[in-house]
Image (cartoon, rainbow, N blue to C red; front, top):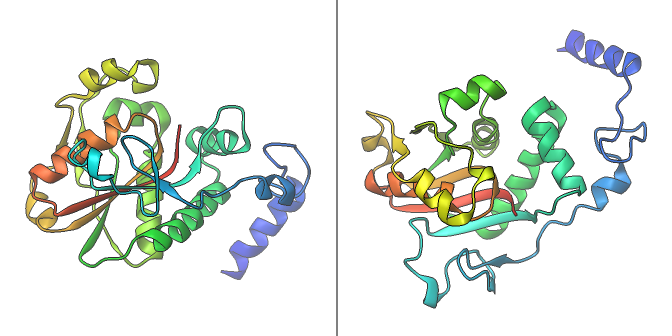
Length: 232
């Protein structure tokens, strides 16, 4: 442990950390830029986006999606500090950003959710995309989030490779995702009757997490709470 600490100290001396936003020599995010990130103090109905306390569907929108609740940490805008953090985490996988995100997810989750018989599941990535990126960032977040809160982690979903969702419009995303996400063989009994915390980084139309939730509900998961860093 002491040797590893010394190695990190030596590397920090040779390659001092710079803020990924303003490039000040301090940390991966300087204090000023970190303070500019505002965690949302409220949640919204996932469908109509009307403000509420816990991210559940309002009475008029019940039944619109397969999941039951959506908890967000930030609102996502392009060309912001948050976007730079997400991009660096996804494509460079900076370990310090991962720890920062997990702390945020934990704090926000505990504000708005409590329950028992919980299992943490990541939004899956196709094998083709994993080969391209090197790893599934949602799985990294979910695994470490589960460990920190002493919850069960279950990589229960698999995904057929389709066109990148980010390049498509809403209606095309729904068509593109249809019947593309499934529960892995042998995991159905583990999910039966469970409360699932489905982890993703950024949600937009919620089409991906909804297709995941459809598969989880088919496996008789009792309740699904989507926990995401932000919604674009």
